[in-house]
Amino acid sequence: MSNVLIINGHQYYPFSEGKLNSTLVDKAASHLAGKGHNTRIVTMSEELDVEKELENHQWADIVIFQSPINWMGVSWSFKKYMDEVYTAGMGGALCNGDGRHQDSPKENYGRGGTLTETKYMMSLTFNAPEESFNDPTEFFEGKSVDDLLFPMHMNFKFFGMKPMETFSCFDVMKNADVENDFKRFEAHLNKHF
Image (cartoon, rainbow, N blue to C red; front, top):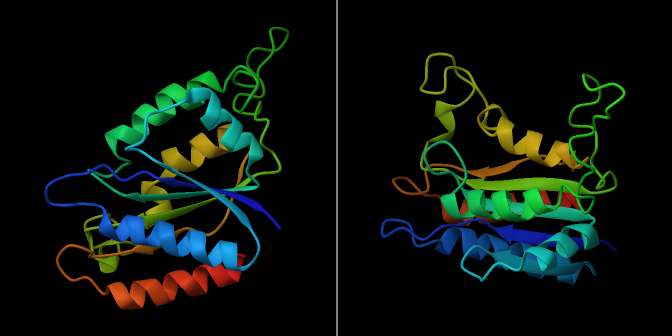
């Protein structure tokens, strides 16, 4: 069985308390434990221990990043997590620098990752309706969820991690369909675990 690190990237806002993201984290942990996987959960409200977080990433076979998307990206608290943990990991825990060497400084950028046996899955919640993606006439001009989260994919790729299929809940503030989202999430987990 696998070791699964679940990161809850939610940042509390008065209009978004994080109940959906927290429930998805709980459902993932329960589902995975029921299948014999080991899990560890990290939330942005916890005090950050950089060395422990580096160890968590080295321990994990799979990292699930659960987060709302705020202003077209991750929360400021997860950005802070990345700035502190992922920067510290550049000394070998997550990657060996940026992958380049002095003898050929133009080659292999982004190829120094040490987590080449680790996979990651993003599970995201959006205020935006699903229809606003993948349609050139809508707000995201034909771009997909993965296009919008391209920087996150590149962050994980920088460490050598391999992507799993992204899961998304849409329209969670104005037209939520939470029970159906939970069913889809369980099916998504069953497909990948």
